[in-house]
Length: 382
Image (tube, helix red, strand yellow):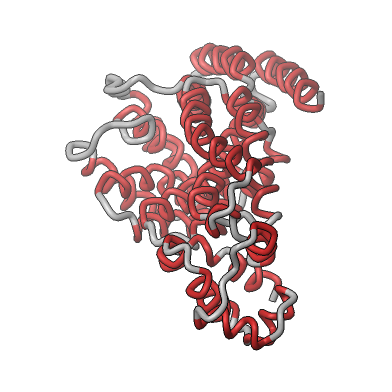
């Protein structure tokens, strides 16, 4: 019940609601509100403090509200921004300015994360998300605010997924899940696929592999273009490998490679990223010998500037395979570099991957990773 009530309260964000609100006609707005909420004129009157006859007169256009106080009162009770009913509200004007600049904040935070500055991205996104959530709690559920809220939650969750240690990665998945809740109000397949993709990846990192495969499979199924599907497939391949599903892993990697020639390369969709994903997936699906043979081949030349964290991920995966092949010296060099870079970029999750890979095998590298992780935990706690 609580969930359904929450979704109903956000019906103002739907395209149909936006068309009604654009009329600025109180009669149409009241009728739409009652239809969506399944409320009678008596119930709506009780909400507004009017009797049934007066609500009926407003809906029929026989009575008009013209004073600012009454219009502001109705807007507040119906969870509408006051400007929809023609009321100039300084707070609402300030909020609309925040919406305009908030979109830039999300874009810049994403650039910062991709450049290896996820902690700075979190610092930029957190105040924006807090203000938008407060607005939603107060009934501000206009479409542009909710869309920005969904995008900000996605970016915040993804950035947190870089800077939190494994035992706290559920927090990152929590924020991306909240973005999925919002995008259901929009008839926008690109936005929905993006939310499911980012949420699925954070679920995988949090260890909820089955749920991750489910979300990522859905994201791939509804992706409206080859580019959107290509953005999902590398993450789905990772999740399938982590699940130990060799059939799904092989199929997904194969399709991802097929799309490389027809879509623009990104930090995920490029030969270098797929090389690392294949290495890790082969190990996860118990095909160690094949992984070792794959690692012996030269990695493909980069076709795009890769985010710094991807370099760390590749170093760890390749180092792990070197260990499996018996090359302790080569593995130690790769993993020591990974520790230094993961510490510099504040990537605790990657340090924990090094810990697992080196436990009982490379004590010096294991100790270095443990020390770096302890430093990051102190910073996070502060």
